[in-house]
Length: 313
Image (cartoon, rainbow, N blue to C red; front, side, top):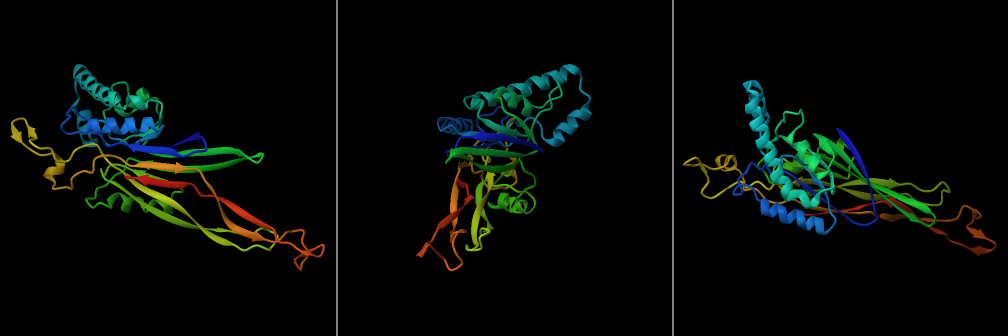
């Protein structure tokens, strides 16, 4: 598991997960122009991107296993290697405007193993100046600002995984993700693979305890965790599709699966401390609440870190 951390300015940050493109060279089956427009929209808004895997549809896990077992000659391996690099170049051409804006890119199920020992996913990371996050990652956003002679610091943690398993229901990614907060501490859970754009909030309850003066009362407050399925740019149903001269649908069509919701979510993270608890009294007061013959009430509030997380689908 990879752990990466970034310092962020104290202002709303746009986070855009992008994955499940599965480009293999056919513009009819991948919404490249929609992806290009999505990237351009994010770049205009200084968004940060997270790669969710399956950028090129070179080889599935079973395909890679069979290819390794084939015992190909060096020239055959070189031809396959060159073809995989061309697919990466195609996707890089679409994603190039976002270079240097990637918090990291995950591995997916579909990638090519290159002859130099790396993968097509790693090659794309190198081109986009992005860390390679492997199979699963924690990404920390650290917000800090100076206020009243001291520094305020707050963090937002993202748990990200390409995903696994299957599920045809709209809520399948959420059902998979909702089990994770019991074991993982994060504010935002991201998962691809299911090719569904879906999100659900999950509230956690916390207690704000009184100060040691004993004159304040405890209170409850709530912090929201977001569970997000990160969508896809691979079309499921394509009119007039053929394999050679034979009309054949994609695996989505053959499997009577739901049409894919093309696109990806946009998440806005706003750093925020919120006053959630009013404390009354003053440690210097007399037990009867009076000081120097005059009643006095001192109001103090407990600030808690409550970042605002919102998602647009």
